Each structure stands twice: as structure tokens, then as C-alpha cells.
Length: 80
Image (cartoon, rainbow, N blue to C red; front, side):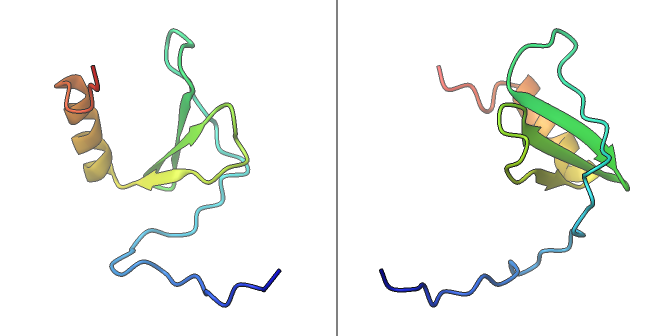
């Protein structure tokens, strides 16, 4: 099998730090339902899949998190 020559490059405009999430205090929903956990780390909000905690986490600024939560509350992501 040939070795890939593709190199990963930082995303253009990526202004988020490489956060150390090893000691993050992950929180699930108040009902304990779902597969998403969040943690507040160094002024950012990290979100991960609780079923695969070793997989990459999404990192949000407070403004991005606010827009995401508002959109979710308004049904923006409702796929039904």
C-alpha cells in the first residue's frame, strides 16, 4: 500500500488554541441522556462524543457556542 503524501495543514483563519483537555471536567446533560459532553476550558467550550471520548473534540468560542445553542433551541438542526 502506498504511503500518503498528503500533509495536514492548519485551517485558514483557525484561531483556537490546542487545548489540553486531559483534566477537563466533562459534563453531560442534566438528564444524562445523549452522547454529547461539554467542558469549559481556558475560556473555550469543548464538546465531545461521550461514547468515543478519545476522538477529537470540537472547540467553540463563547460567541460560537451561544450561536449554536440558540440555533438548537430554535430547531435549526431538527432533522425530522
